[in-house]
Image: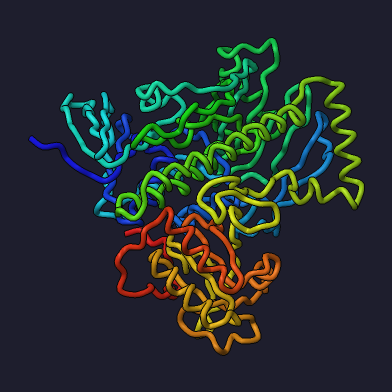
Length: 546
């Protein structure tokens, strides 16, 4: 009997695996996602996401469903052992250009439920629970995966063009490939506590700068609270996880009579990266590729970045428009940022979570000085510790980012006007395709070249009008109501921009330079037959789930 065939097999249906399947589903890729567990996890683990990740949820078509239960954090206070506020990061109204709030908390079981529900939109995507990969082999044409249905013992064989390991820190796919993880494990234990209250708690989010018990405590999504706190040297795991001890720890921050403990677990954290993220037709994503402490809340966010980066490239490869040259840019683009994020997280922990009384006292004094000085206050208040994400090397004009140039940077997402007076977030007009944006005053030859490039890429062509010319808007035009797009083009001295499906800028050009961009892109992506350029869609609720 011949093996069942699909385009892509995903192993692991946590947040990273599930959103990967949703992206591939949107691109029309026949996808099988398998998970060894019989049922979805009900334990909360990851709980925070930044504005970039919310933007990625938006592009996956599910931001509206998730928004119902997201708690958008308005501020975070750095407090000392006496609960004195040393400084604050004010997230409300903070805009890093992604069109979403800077920090939000969620319930992981609810998040995973929405992501799995999203898979039902796609008849060509199937989720099989209770299946475990026993082995796989690969050749020039694809990957053959042998799996077992755990309840029945039934053996299955499935053939795919590509295999993705999204199966977590103890990845079986990584182990079968014999790819080691390089890095450090920390022997100092932490306790993670998730609890609920009858009604939502008052607004609070604390970064606890107390050498006696540093950590993080916050109100979470729905009625949840979350605390990640360092254990003291004399506290043993088996004792700390007892209900009365957990309640005593919680009692330092709130009235425990209102609390129901959902989960309390002791962890040690890791800073590790897989030696390779690709082996032929097999790729590693998320915790299978990298592990980091939770101090900046970037573990799951980094895994979702992996998914967003790889899926559109796989879709092009499956359709025959791209090959290894493009697929090799996945690790080239993602590894440096993951390593930088791990290093930043470790440094954050060393500074803000020190158990040295001397270091803590000095740090707290410095923080107070920064906060009280109007010139330095924005460093903490406006969350300047968060650096913009820049791709250093990969699929971009020139092959690498150069300081001051747009290639490899995120394209902003403002709200724009449309023909007829309606408005939409810019990304909703891209529909997860390439986008070529051209200023309205660009010369006609530039416009024609932009049209040809959009056709090559099966992309969207958008003409950018200033607000004063809103009356000219027609289908395929966007009105730059807030001036953000005009400012971007002015900063980069360009009249045309090519934006990748993951919202990173491939490159920007002025005048005839766009033809050079087109030739560079053809080294990676071959044009597919196309009847016409797809016009930009009118705004709609893209997140609808049947």
